[in-house]
Length: 329
Image 1 (cartoon, one colour):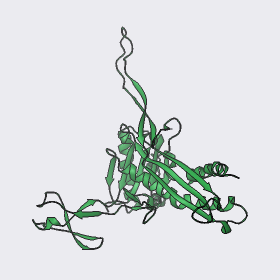
Image 2: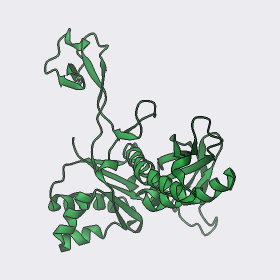
Image 3: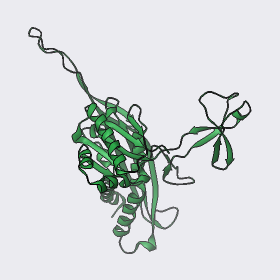
Image 4: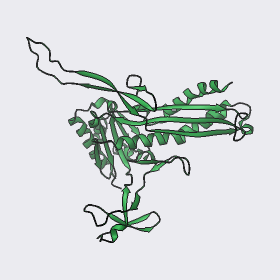
C-alpha cells in the first residue's frame, strides 16, 4: 500500500472520529454555508433581506432586496503534530496501531482543543449577550437559563434551533431538581450538549509546540507600566514573586513604574447558547504518511497530521443568537 492510498483510507476515519467526539461539531457548516477559498481563506454564506412594505395596487409590490453573499474570512489557526510508530513496535500490520494512535490523538488532543478554541472564540464575539454570574444551585441555574431563554424569545431567536452547551456539573443540578420548572426551562432549548469545564473558558492560550503543546486557560499577563503618573480607572500592581502580583491600593507618582495587567485572565463558562444559524465553524484535516525507509529522523512509520480551523464566525446580523454565562473568577 503506498502513501497516497494510506492517506485516502485514513482521512475519512479521522473525520468520523472528529464528528463523533467534538461537542461543537454541530456548528460545522455544510456545502450550503461554507466553501473553501484560497490562501488560508474560507467563504461563508451570508443571507440578508429587507422587511415588508406596503402593496400598491398601481405600482404593485415593494422593491426590497434579498441578498445571498459569500463573505470571505480567514481561518483562525493551523495546528499540526508529527505522529510516529517505531518499525519494530508496529508488528505485522500497520492498520491496527495507526487506527489506535490516530483515534487516541484526536480524542485526547485535537477534539478538546478544538472545542475549547471554538467556545472561547464565540464567547469573545462583539455585541453578543454576556452575563457574569456564579451558579451554585439548581434553583440558580433555572433562573439563569430562564433569563437566557427569555432574552432570546424577546429577540425572536428561533427556539427550534437553540443549542445549549453547558458543563456536566451544572446540567446535573437541573436533572437532580426534576421539577416542572426545570423541565419547562430546558424545553426552550432544542439541543443540550454537556461540555467539560476544561473546554469551557472565555479565552484560551494555544501553545506553539516549541516549549509546550496544546492549550490552557488564559492567565493574566503583566507588563511594566509606561505611565508617568497614575491614570484614572487603571489598576497598578507590584510583583510579589514569580507569577504573583498584588494590586496597589493608592498608586503614587513613583508606583506607576510598576506593573499593569495587559491580558485579563479567562473566566469559566457556565453555559453558552448558540442558535444554529448565528454561527458557523469549520475544520479541514490533512495527513501524510512516510515509511520507516523514508523516515530521515529515525526508523518509524510517520504520520504528519495537520488541521486548519475556523474556530467560529458569528454573523454580525445574528448576534442576538448567542448568549454566554460565565463566572466572575
